[in-house]
Length: 244
Image (cartoon, rainbow, N blue to C red; front, side, top):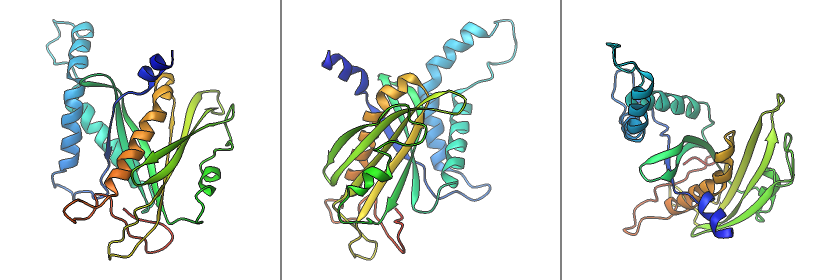
């Protein structure tokens, strides 16, 4: 039974960052083009099937919904969400795959914050991420501890309900990086906080493992390159918050 549950919940994920830089007016946006190409590929088969089922053959116009339109809309939505975050936060988005080639859930946004540690003992992060419960929770949260190559952390999952009764899954996670990096060569300790809400019941079953995969990716990206180059995630901290 445990193996069956693991197979249902431990699904592969694809995680990417929404870039902070926004092209000027009239300039090409390579990132938006990249996202559009991804969703064009991922949605092509499903949109073709929808067109065959719902679009009458005698209608002269093409089926109005295309993979390119989906990708452009998603890229714009992710850009808008990322622009609302403070400088010490970034937006990651993920896609979860139940079958090879096409995601079942995408995009799944996760807010990732970078902070200087407030204490040597990282246990304060448990309270910060609601491990003891939070407003809206309908039952005590579950806590799973996570080990990465760059440090240890945990993830918290709780079921909650909105004021109008809608169920959601709340997930928070934290990672204390053990390989601090500074743009000027100085050491900067970093606490990484991750948070998201999901409302799809199926997604609630897999979001925990998905966020853990994102934590592992962040840990890997914080390690300096073997050739001595900077890590993909390099940090600077002019004040209490850390920018990546």
